[in-house]
Amino acid sequence: MNDVGGIGADRLRSFVERIERLEEEKAALTADLREVYAEAKGNGFDTKVMRQIIRLRKMETADRQEQEALLDLYKRAIGLVA
Image: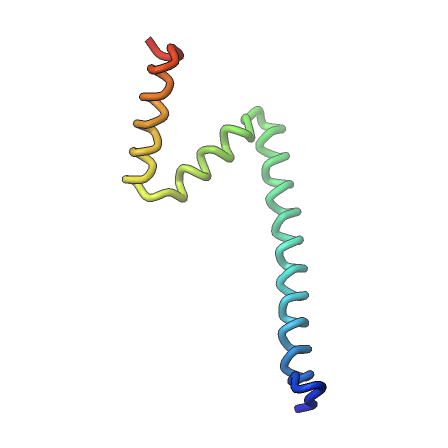
């Protein structure tokens, strides 16, 4: 291993190259997601609502229920819900 100024150059290069590969994969996945959302939109789906649904599905049930209860409470407090 080549040390430069106390830094393992080979090890550092390995980390940098792994990060670069992952960044490339991330960019490809982002492009794929964009295509799927565009396809959904083309089929008449509201992508903003789809994003909200996806965010909600990632949440734990209890957290989601608590958030929905608070949202309902706040909406009633300001007169958005009868």
